Length: 482
Image 1 (cartoon, rainbow, N blue to C red):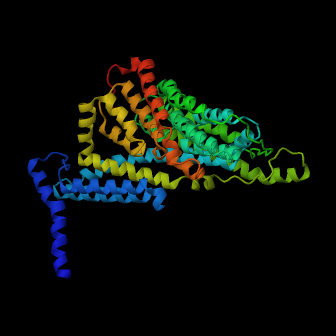
Image 2: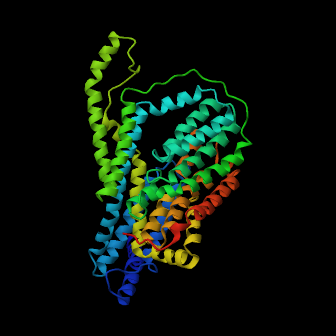
Image 3: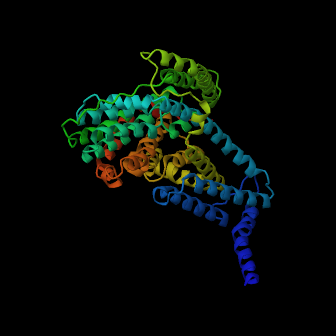
């Protein structure tokens, strides 16, 4: 039996790897091969589709999303490198994959610093203090609906949309757990607001960060999307307003104070963002270097907090009226580094390498030709947003950046907007929506969100129209990728 199977397996592998290679080699030479019509190309597509299906089914299978894409990236590049080596181009794949790894490294270090700061603020109870203040303030359900939406919109440009949404959802559940209708509507509102708020800031979403780090859209130009982003959130919020209960929840007396150093960490985070922007705009260094310098700010403050903790704790024991927060603990930078979302960071590696592999095979050039040359930039960019409601916007945006279509600044802003807010159309379309389905389980669901998709779609269409209206001057000329 084994003797029969071995020739069969060899024949299958040969048909996948060698036959298409000979055909391609005879076509042409040069520094690259078009593998789109080869067995390797088809097999790479199948691997990617299976991997991404497992990513989308994470809530059901409980298989962390990083694992299938890491496997897919490794397999795709192994096949590509094998084919190129057998066609007399042994170093071509290595050069291409190094380019992808460099792009990932810049994104990874930037996000690692941002996540560490967010974790440090969470550990110092900054977000808990905000939550307790909102809970005990005695607002009506409608006032809380708008207040949590406004806060989500303005916090997400600095913190990521998932952290922002989870914070606001904690407030919603604390005051409205007995009102499932309010919880559902408020969660939808927070998801839309967090995604919209992240669309006009380079720091608000991974997609905007990738566009900024690529050097396509200058830092200040992102803020031209501020008005379209407000419209994207305000239109569905105004429609849902009338379905929100009008009565008041019972106020709570819970008081949570910020731990020692928390306010200084907020200030250092803002200084770190300013450093990253300055590095990029004034001395033309990667923003990642500015963020890593900002990490040193936090490390030095952490050292000070750790060294002075014993002295402050002793003073508190001798003076009960001291303002030191009860339950204060020593600060450790590396504990907060360790609490970063490693599954998410590794997921980005897998996505960037896997999509980069498909691009090197030649598929992204095909897609770019069909969408941007066949449909036109506007229709293609609108469709990118709709697609991001089904497929995560990160691989979609990375694919667009890899394609590098010739577009005006207005069109690059359009795809930045649509990729950022398109995920709001479905609850599974963004990390914020998926996170809240778990946190408000049973009250905020896929179908409760789907019920209001029509209103969110109106906001999506209105934001695109407003963008063309207020940013019409940006649709002249062409921006070439650096």
